[in-house]
Length: 334
Image (cartoon, rainbow, N blue to C red; front, side):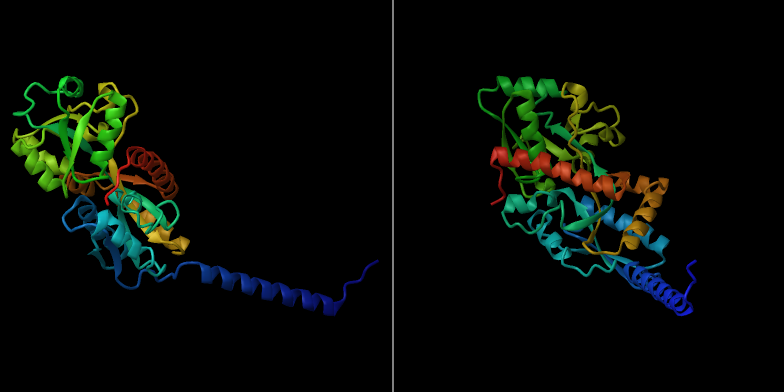
């Protein structure tokens, strides 16, 4: 019979203890600092102040700061459709104290500008989606008095001897890409007249210099309500939350069409998993808050929570979809 050796047992116990201690040390080293956050947290917005991504970031920062018990600030780093601020953000320390509210214009910006500044599919960590930004096809009712729905617009465009002009907030914007996709699906043509931002595009749409726009509802809503513009189709059913009764493009013959833009919170690669999980958990709670949802709607956005993995898949799918349209059409911001 084998008899246990006392010294062997002592070595085994010692080795087991050391292994346990090393395991505990390694686990604690990889986990987030339990005191996080113990200082101010910054949310980078790669777009100008006052826009939908900036507004969503500020609404969320206030509520998130309250739940985390720490101050949060929003810092704007605008330029090149979000690529300048996003490229700077991904180089931030991965300690949980620098985050970013990602907006969809930045999805394709490196492709459109040809700068290869980042790849949304692999260069940061998705935390959770925060908002959807419904869009609508709007027309000037003085220029197109008989166009009250999408089919009438398509028929008018097909019958026109010269291409009907439409505008968007810029070359490669989602209003531009969405209309280009719809033109292919509907077999009609219109001439794109890009502007630098929604405000000047809407101004000239009201003035009659252009007839049609695939617009962010937040930019067009006051003018729709005043009767200066007419909404004829929503980018998705979520548009109805801001424009009740408006039929979506899908409901008007293009099944499956969905062109909402959206945004969400992201963190630098290497940010501790516990920090990402905590942020995800808190965002799920605050985005279900009716008060926050109403604030979002007041800014033209719809509060929309999706977890990290769902956001990652959504980024990849949208990149594939919209980059194909941009490349097929030869769309470039340069």
